[in-house]
Length: 527
Ligand code: 16G
Ligand code: ZN
Image: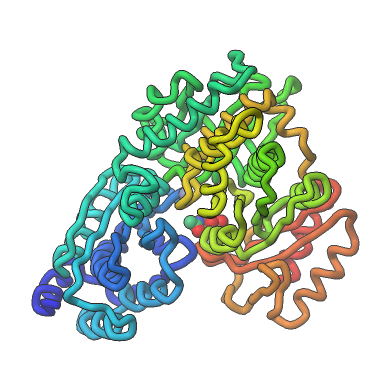
């Protein structure tokens, strides 16, 4: 380690005095002007992680659905996964070290993690379309190079595309080619193969309106659309040409306000979807003939996907286990439908993709989705082998196995991916001949309400049982229990946010009025 060079360059990316940040659920996230030193230091950390794992590490510069003025950064581990928890702590220490302590912290991390400093390092970098992202990603590169790491800057990418690149590079090309072209080709080939099998390929399955949140999704979908246009034509809205990133549009806006984005004209029964600002979330929606808005969120996406996969497994005759992973935010109706009607086991984890992803890896086929629209399906190596064998067989089994093979290729196995999920959903709807209304009618969501509460210190609230029960402060859970008893089909929980300085409240009940009341009463109990 050339400590002199590190000190010299670090001074060019000086930390504002007294600024403390934490590597949260999705990395560091705050106002872009406070992040230059964090970017430089994450470049340094990515090199150490790369040396330790002897693998390529990813660094993504994005703040997802946050306002345009914000930015953020997260590291991607060798198999395209979120950074390991022990390294999240190192990231926080390094980001908060005062200038004179930087060297010591770097040496500490290297020693604790037994990093061989002689080992080569390789880091890949991607960024979203925020005005601040280009300069900030340059600061990451400064950090990488000052520690002697090699790098490849992919420039503009969606977050899941960067996860894909990391995964490809560390699996010797078995998963796919680590180029944007490789990503487009892999997904489109699988999608076109699948939709060729669809007997219902009428116009209604061929067109889709996409709200791109004025973000990177628009750019990437435009580049990609001619690859899959045989199977689907997409009409892009909020493509960044006029509006501001995530402003009154995008998946987070649509999900949390339960209304359509601005800038998109929707005719009745037209199938529409929204990506978030870095294209790792997707939600669907439509207006019915009476002009009512219907949201199809991550829970219903998981239901569509898992029921399709289960049917294919039955046709192939393989007894592979399939599980669905949700969080406490999953609508009670979705959990009931999955367990009671579809007979699929459902598991609940804490909020945050890393928790769901990890749990989903326990199954032959693990489908995970957060209600907010982040999710994917993971397939074990055993499944891939069995399916490859069945795909050689004759008859009906062969057809189902071929389909499953293509579906496996179409899912991004590294992270939830709006583009990949969109193509999976479109393929399933076409293959099953389902309209958006029929999909929506699988079950009816229980009315629900989410609120944020400002408190002096959100850390006084701690939870257990996948955030469904409060442990502290004493008496809070009992108070919630008493309130819940007053309403039918009701459920409520509180949890400290991992991304904002607030406590979140969730309530559901048999009517919107009851859900609203319950949420309000629970928020009063939090004080
Ligand atoms: C982050 C998480 C998302 C989670 C959200 C919860 C990742 C990549 N993203 O955006 O999965 O739903 O945080 O935010 O893990 P909250 O803790 O503020 O409710
Ligand atoms: Zn996102």
